[in-house]
Amino acid sequence: MQPTPDFDPAKLAKSLLRRSRQGALATLMAGSGDPYCSLVNLASHPDGSPILLISGLAVHTRNLLADSRVSLMLDERAAGDPLEGARIMLSGRAEQADAEKDLLQRRYLNAHPSAEGFVSFKDFSFFRIRPTGTHLVAGFGRIVDLKPAQFLTDLTGAEDLLAAEEGAVAHMNADHRDAMGLYATKLLGAAAGDWRCTGCDPEGLDMQDGQTALRLDFPERVTDGTSLRKMLVRLAGEARTKVD
Image (tube, rainbow, N blue to C red; front, side, top):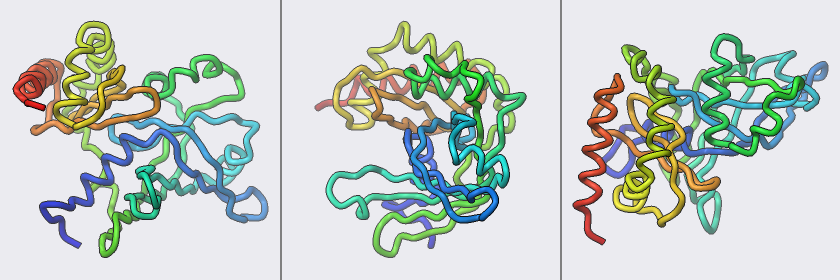
């Protein structure tokens, strides 16, 4: 199925990955191989791949340590019939964090501040799901299989932006909460709230109020701190010109 003006499968899949804070994780039972499903909290890597913080005491953790193959169901949590909302079933392999642990921890805690109380427990570990594909269902006749290159964000050449992300997020939350509110209400049509920044990447900005998350897509790709600042100033200006 080809994208249309009112339906862009890759964009929708990317948005679901960025906005989802919970999902149903399916693993294979160690020993028997029987299917096992559990509810997990999640955040997203700068490329959009899911981040998990899970306990070694949990059945799903023991399962994926024995067989890293997993699938993850994410949905819009639309009002009314949940089957009328978009959802994706992402397949891949879950890898325990090593060199990226600091990055995964920072982004996960931005999305789930309450996890600060147990993130240092010895039995908890960060995992990143490396997707192999996803199955998108977005309504009647809108069912598409996508490859990782279609729904993950290319980080090539964005090293400067990734290095600047932590400081940029802190700066936005400390000094520009008014701009965050404008992005949410004027550009994305959300209700007013205590919106804060949880992350940024070459393609957009992630915001959150409680457990409600929004994705602000950039009109052009940004790859460094200077271009990020210019983009955020530009979008704030556009938001201020919007009328109710």
